[in-house]
Length: 365
Ligand code: G3I
Image (cartoon, rainbow, N blue to C red; front, top):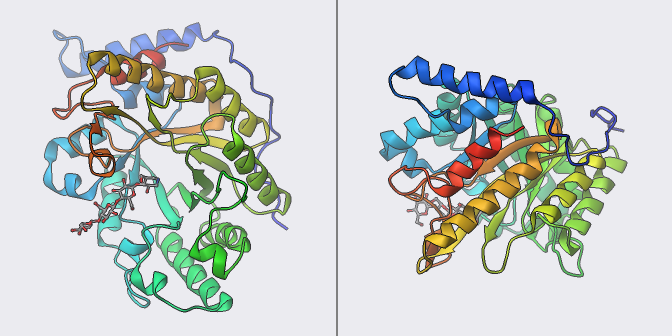
């Protein structure tokens, strides 16, 4: 059986706003940041500086095409973010394109870059129902054969980055959210629910120090899906499976409205109170191309609410990651034509109200 690796949980409520000293540190920190650059020009502290001052990892998913092509993309990434999440290059189809071939080139480059810039790396993702190579989706596997494929994949990928990747999305988007508890997938159909347990066990064996997450979407508020998600991870924990936390993707919209601030706080707190670390793992807030500037202000409020819900949990909230960071590159316009402007920086890398809202919240107790 897997012994719990977490300290006894504590109950989280709205955290007292008592850290005046922390606030002074932030102000001093910001001034120091400014004086370090050019004393004549007050420099605004970056997301990374403010977050690291309060021991929070603020991260961004990285698009390899942008990383390879755009020096400002790489410079902004390092300046603003302390955590790097490979957006696609560690997915099954990209890193394991054929049964006997792994392609680590892009993943190795992002790991190298992150380490060179003192960034923490969160691996994404070992088991998902999407982004699978043809040799998996088109294959005919017995349960034993697919279990062996999955064990080899996880052991090889996690083992390669042992000691360099701090945490992983082990399984991604497995809760169905309707009557069925689990999303139908090749993994579920051929192996059964045990594929989830096994994935965590294999990841832990490959790197015992890595923190292991189950990551899901549309479970940011208290709803049927987050109820099922909580039951799932509590079941894993009760069977001694080495799971450390839950990622809440937070791909949000203005219409339909996002979870309210209270709903976000209540939901994340109940996972923390159940003994799980939580992370906002893929946040973006898509806006209609036709929307006016007021939508940018509404977007800022959504970002602030999510960061606030995280910060109120203290060390139980282990990360706040956006799915990209500049509107110049993003998955939204191709996935949702007519929508975009989902990220904290605009297409010219200029701060949007969302960015300023994150900065402001990080400067509050
Ligand atoms: O790299 C190839 C390129 O060589 C090829 O020319 C091109 C055209 O076919 O495709 C490129 O791969 C694409 C990849 O993004 C990189 O751009 C894939 O087709 C495309 O499916 C993939 O989409 C990604 C999607 O996950 C599926 O993996 C999105 O960028 C990515 O933002 C999105 O992210 C997911 C998270 O992993 C999980 N949570 C939901 C989130 C949004 O869907």
